[in-house]
Image (cartoon, rainbow, N blue to C red; front, side):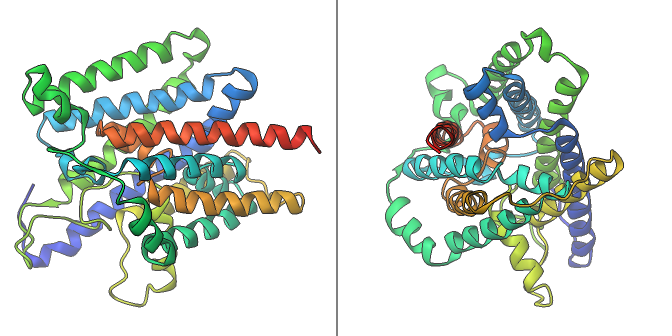
Length: 373
């Protein structure tokens, strides 16, 4: 937390966005190198019983939880200021949105982050997914689908007495104040995940362990930049606490559905001074740039297009489902599946489970389609 003058605001904003770009650049490059894909992780388990990519995802979650809760323990950030820990528990939105997103990402060949990484590698199908996902997400945020989301889905909710992070919900039961509860619960959960992930000897390669750890660390890094470096205890103009350069007005880390919508909005109306680049927009651009840089440097850049009409239709429908589902569930396999989980938010665990169930359904549907062609 800090207090600065109005003249220093542009500099602070530039610092937040520059470091966010650098961190997301690393995320894109590492994901491209590893072939990191959350959709692929689920498909590998369902189709072949291979848990390697699932362990990559879970180890990134493990590192993100440890790092985020360490920042909380150090007083550097407050996860109560993240969108995931809202006291209003919109359970149906997490379920419905997660199921839609999970099924959609299978049809579209990957989640939001994978779409950006594939764009960096030359995949033209993902360029189409990017635009359709972004448009649908924007319509779900502010357009016709927003009316349906707000009117029919989000009213099915439970108002909690505290923020919905598990330490706050269980702290009283365990007899722990909020801060120690965060430390204990975060550490226990991360250790349990880490033990399961690392027990497989074949997984313990430098690429798997260090690469997955780097992805989780990037999430922690963006939390720190957004939630600490960019946090003003008192904005010099409004005199209100604020987080610089975030679309939500709260601290943010990596997520890739609503930010894709915001990226399209910014690209189309950048000449409008009210449209400014945010942490989410810069993370989208940084991820694409990092992936492209690695793909070109490693000679892995390849143009790829649709194979037939059905392939096109699957990607279009999948992009629509991801755009709607990601906004409704407040995140994607990264936004809820790593970033949200790092806050220990109950809704993030629910959305994470729903995404996995939806993806399993998508994999089985595609297998059924192949068997009946």
